[in-house]
Image (cartoon, rainbow, N blue to C red; front, side, top):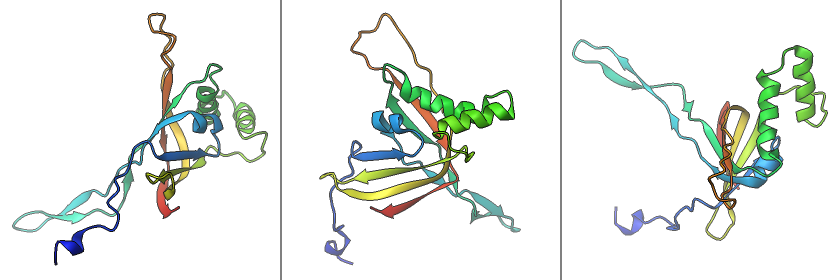
Length: 175
């Protein structure tokens, strides 16, 4: 193998600011999104015992890291409140009727009760052309950060919040 045959066809490097996040359930968070991650995965390993030593064997279940999104908080708190309502619909109500009502409000008065949402993270090239799409299936929020108010900060300091999600799996497809 020669050095020329090992040179990749595209030597452009990935840029961290070249992405678009699309959430069916969170339009304001999507608009104000500042950071999102492509979560890591792990396969794990187990050991196969032998008389001489335990031999590592590849695992059989993928474990996905959490998906995190950092977004700007608008002055009416809509971006933060969208996530809060979703989490409230999943785990906060005091009765089944309350849970169904909150979920219907979150889904635009839909009669379908679902605590999940799919999301897409589109990775863009240096020229802002879509390269690939990461499709997250059956995503749901597990945490929403504080919104900190501070009179000692400048009015120019923009408040951000972070949401953490779990999901069933993600797939990557060309855009």
